[in-house]
Image (cartoon, rainbow, N blue to C red):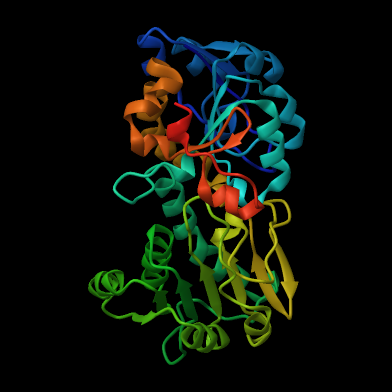
Length: 367
């Protein structure tokens, strides 16, 4: 198969969908790999490493897209890239369709098959989302700590506190991969930590992992109470394929003290705070009711070297499956098939269809 790897053009997105080592693996299996010149530079991989691994370097993204049977990316296509894709082509990347109607319509019109990293499921878990969830989760308390500083607009509170002075109060809403990762860093930094989680089984697990934290059932009352007294609130809720639920109301945000910080890791799926909207690494924050909102839609792009290697470690085996069998792989691999969101103008993910009130077609009817 001819596999194309495009350079990312989203604001400050320096990750790349294939490492030179991953490229070498694909080439050794007799696939042709086209890599856009400069695609790996932001992650510390010069063009020569790709050419030495057997890739063909191509300067034009349009040429890569037109020649490739499978296109791999990191982030969703932007408007300038919509025209690249065509009927019968496989596109494998993070799409987050539920929060982006324009992208959904464009990919429906393209006729391409869109496979989303974030909705591939294995035993109820999302293995291709997990590595970036871990990065974003571990980033969240660091961003919260930075923006609590007075020069950054915060209330001037040191995250860890000092002798005789209490540490910052941080609430993490959601106890999955993002939430646990955020809690690990927040706990390590010495914060006063609360985790809100709906699953009783998961609450018990979190109590064992974080014996010094407050682990509470996520209810309207517990959210209202903890958000109000928090210095930092991290949104860490994800429902595969679906738009994120608005768990924290505008009224709750307005109850927070000025200079407090929100980090909405769920912003890719629309965010869990009513006051959130996507931001970029170039302009990462805004204020609402005196509360600083950090809502960068590609948080792991800030640490591209770590993120690229971690993601390729997870995606490469799936890329190999696609390269070997093409669309027919979904006949037998039902868990991988959950990653298929759009096929030839039809939505095959229920969450995406529901988010936009569009028709849903089970992927099983199309393979």
